[in-house]
Structure formats: C-alpha cells, structure tokens
Length: 112
Image 1 (cartoon, rainbow, N blue to C red):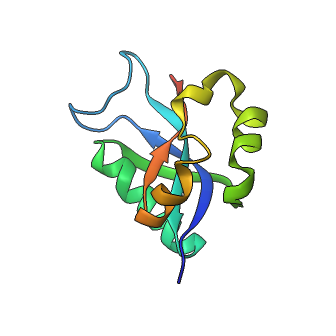
Image 2 (cartoon, rainbow, N blue to C red):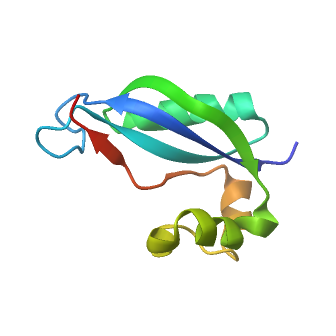
C-alpha cells in the first residue's frame, strides 16, 4: 500500500530536560505532517515522533486530513505563507512521503 500525507495537530506538554520549549511555557500545539498508509498509522507515528522529542503527548486537536501531494505547494502558500521555507518543496515531497517521513509545522506555545 502506498503512503499518503496526513496532517493533524497535537497538543503536547513539557516533558523531560531535552524538551525544546521556551522557559515558562507549559506546552504547545504542533501541526504534524506524517506519511503513512492510513490515518490511524499516521496518528501513531506522529505521537511516537513527539514523544521521541521528549514531549508529553496530551491530545489530538481537530480532524486528521489527507493532503494531496499534487496540491502541496498551494496548501503551504495558503496555510503557511510566512513559513514556506520551513517545509519541503513540492518536488521533494513525493520521495519523502515514500520514505515515511514525519515533520512538523511551527509550534504554537502556551503558558496555561
């Protein structure tokens, strides 16, 4: 079965000493981009990835969406225009998704 690209937001809390959150921040909302064969596998991979970064997984916020690879550039331009350099380019994405990558959008931190 071929990998697809899924997007969802996780709520994470400050974990151990290697957790990369600014001082005074309790947690963050993190857009996860996960390549997997189905949305359930994508959710599992996303949770494992944030835990491996020393965060405490708290919750999934909103829906899980599939992002068609052919519309990736339009998606980034519409959703993350100020952060487009942060994300893979349209021509890089099919190979990355084929490899099963997990990557993240900008973290939105919170105090309480």
